Image (cartoon, rainbow, N blue to C red; front, top):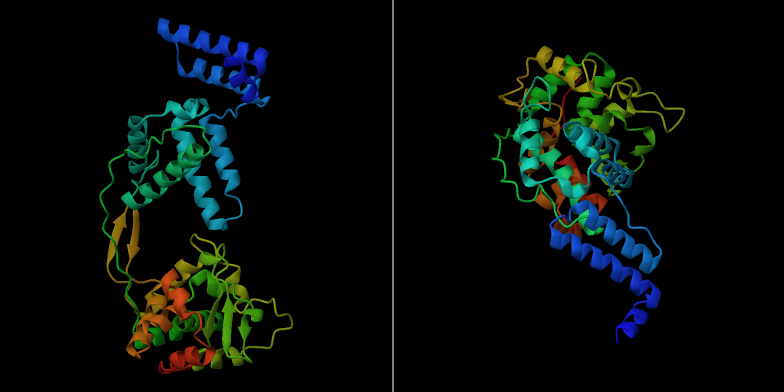
Length: 365
């Protein structure tokens, strides 16, 4: 019966004898109390090799983290940058332990790692609970994938006590008068245009800066683009061009090449830092006398209620004040749930244009 079972399993008598010898050795080590994770893994690897001819995948924390990161390629650059930063912190904390097996980390280890992150990951400024949660989520994802592939049966981050919610800052919109002040304080025609673009499309700062003339369909009166945040999902948004924005665009020189950026100078300054667009917009707010609102400190970083992103909230408020339905507002902004998307994808251009044109024009001249 044993021979038949082994034959059906593809082992055969010779294979069966070799496997039985390994099992007997493991049993003897267990009886003597000297069986450990290394010897058990070696035994299982040998059995798999005898049975299938294939080697069992062997990963350390370092090599599996590298493999996990490699498989994430294809996501947006900002997402990959975050993944690389978070995994680098993880490996930095582990030091030589990164070359141990996946099973070598315990819940206690992860608790210490999380506290290290909260303390600033070796830096001067402490991290917020929100930032720390994001970094721990990456480590958890690494282990979840390893479990799915049978490389480990334990996620040491899963049993951690949840961190308390940190204070959140609600974004505040600008009033029409404040948008007018911002456009008048703009240091260039491009900055004036990008502020109008943000106010009447709800696009984020980098998305506005990277728009090209092929995204602008003046003959149809719409802007068709894929925001960077939804690029991976290939979510295309079609935004009706408001009369105020249309006037600005029509007054710009006709581009020779449709791939030319609408705001060519600002498109070169999309990075962070002292000369980044966010800092430049903050300076415009200061010049215009427009308040940044309340602030909170999140792990050494000060956040304000109002920034360029507030223009997205501004458009939402204007549409709401003009009695535009939530469904149409969400479609214009490209910010909708799957349920709403399934129901309202049939909204036509006329409906969307009517909604956009319900907003009063901005006298920005």
